Image (cartoon, rainbow, N blue to C red; front, top):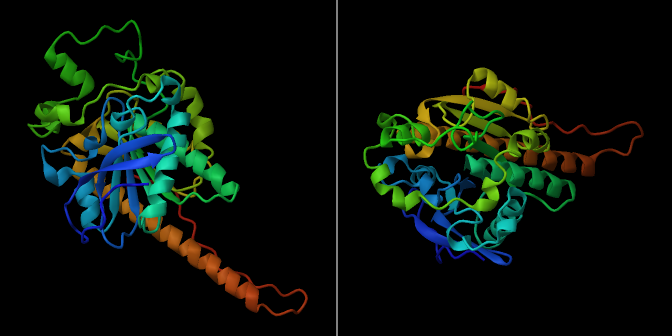
Length: 342
């Protein structure tokens, strides 16, 4: 059961408050911007060593995904992923991404059972949170095939690729750690001018110890990514920062990543200008969050068109003549092509 408060604020409210979700044997903390009669619910999943405040940094309030999303009529639920904050005591064996996805699905199911989530969920995820989101979307596809629903409209993710940067510290054991503050800034953050001045001063708000169980999967991710991606059956949008520090990120690599999602009806890719790995904490956060919201709207529209086609099909079937050889043909939802740079 979620504990977001008794009543949703009016649409456009900038009220963001803590939330606790029951997830079976566990509880997940996070932040919630909730509106009346939501168009849908964006679920934001942070990366490693962060928490939900990654999407609601205080250095420049106009960059917040929660504020932007609520103003546009969407609930925004930024979770502290399993293994962080309220669930920091989670056993290391339950911190891998398969287990995280199982726990997160339980929490989201409980939230949907007690709160108005609108048309459904759109995942907006970063780095290790994107890895979790891919597992969630793959599990949702399996659940849909088993007629257990899924309520997932789409997936937007950033900061995950197929190939790590060559000689990346933290990936290649022979690469020494940064020796100076300036080197550390470059390795973990990028150019200072990409971020509001107060971002790092407020880092205690959004930084957390990394969950050890997920860190153990650093080297197993690249070979497991293609099989997971091929199971996802909802629209996908992939964003890479222009100055990405962890992954190889260019248009050719983005095209290769997009090609992994062979069952997705739509795949969009974007190389985001003036951004480094931690997109949602930098100045590029606002255009990124607005683009993610536009993608969420496209996912919502696609779902509504598909539901309308299903309804038309049922109606046509019920009223179809009994004449042999005659069959009502329901209009099909339009299939959109693969987009780049949207």
